[in-house]
Length: 447
Image 1: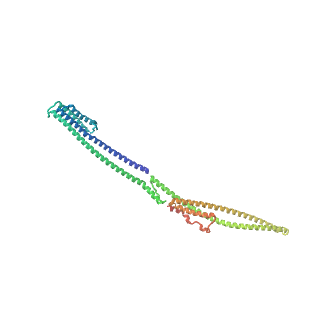
Image 2: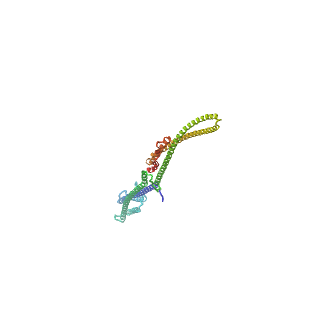
Image 3: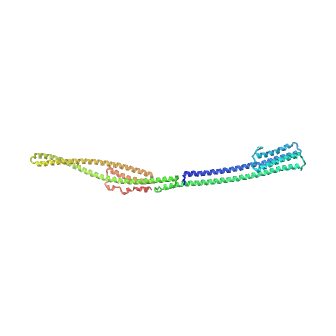
């Protein structure tokens, strides 16, 4: 099955409309052509009646001159008579071939019946000239054979002219009636074609409206609902289908992004809990080490002082023992061992002092770790700020971002407190509740 795009459908629709307009124009031009042809025939037939009147008039003038000539009127000759009758014959020839007569343009007679009538009038004129010549050469009394033949020939010319005039009038009337009928048919055809064209244009407008407006309204209505769980799932292959599929892909991408943000928020909350727990334990150990270090330092100072006093007393005792060596050699030997033990004890005290200094270095490193925790806390606060900005941009759909930003901001506050080394009086009350883990509700809120 061929699936046309909207642009192709529009081109096809406008092509059909243009084709109908062209067909309507051709039909109108054809009707006008017929109308013009009928009008031309009518215009050609109207002068024919006048032409036969002219022939009849010329014949009558020639007949009048002939009768005057026969009655002996001076200046009337047979040549003058023939001038008029020859004009009639020449006029008939002009009608058959077409031409101009006395400033009037006469078209060529194309109607078979009318041409036959012109030929009959022409033959009647020729017969009249023959009968007139016979009468002139053989004059006789009124009622004679030549007179009667001439009179009959003249009557035949007039009768044929009357027949030709009647036929010309009949043809003119028929042409006029045909022209009126053609005009009425052309007008009806134009009206029907215009109505058909308007109907097709209206149907095309409705089709285009259904083709474009309805899918766009569906897209707008679905977007107004602001529900990330609503998709089109369309099978359309045109531009509207591509738009719907792109919208489905966009909504799916947003939904997946919100799910990832929710998962990241849970991970951040868990990491915050672990950081808080580790920082609390580290703070407690640091306090204990500080107390123990202070106690050991004081004890070491006292022990060192006592050892110095004991060493001085031992030296004095050694001197005294040396003096009494001779009296107590065994006691001197024991005293030497005691002195050796005292020296070993001094070494242990010095070793303890070295360990105390190492503990002091560890305390310095713990302070650096606390500083790093503070920096991490600042980064968490920046993440919270960015999430708040994205929530503001997203509007109604960014409620999930707003919840994430609030929870990350709470974690950042905890990090600041831990990094500064000032823990709350009641650490147990400072642990995050289970509500912080439920930031995944952002998806439902955004939906």
